Length: 223
Image 1 (cartoon, rainbow, N blue to C red):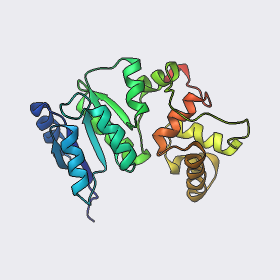
Image 2: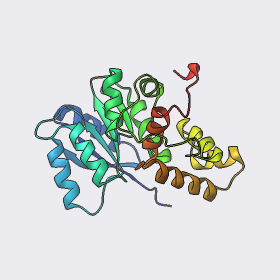
Image 3: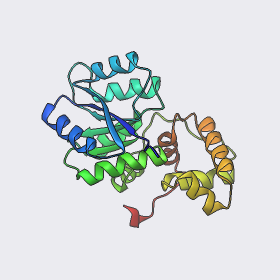
Image 4: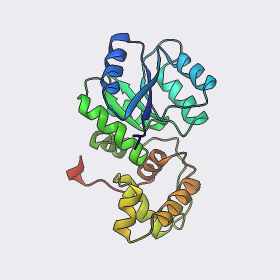
């Protein structure tokens, strides 16, 4: 049986760091690095010229010509199926909240352990996003502002709120179905309704929406 590869693109103008990351990823049997870019402009040019998009982009935020924040905005809008992991040396709450706000599916500081990088990649492939305790704490303390708000008390059904809460706890479709005694198809139907109602492009957007509107909480033990 052929193992399905996770296709990764790297965008970072620090060549030594980028090559080291590529070396780490290529050692994994289920990961393939399909493109390396020096800046956001090179990355966008690549996406415009290929029909086989990467599953995940590891995106440095400080790059020349087109920085990672602007590139993330454009890619999230034009290629919402591609998941972006922001790579940066900064980890202030306001900076993290801004990165998530523009569409990143996760966030990693460049001093992260290699095991953490691989964990994030696999969690994103399984669930569509990965927010660790630090990111969740930032969203709780400083929720992004440019998110659609709830219109009335009946905007989401009780079942949708249940599923939204479990999504925010980073449960997969299978796990949600088992916990709520539903079929996977039913859970997928509710998740699609949530995306439509909240005008979110992906499940990461649903999490941001939930915290913006204080629809879910975080247990102190998770922070």
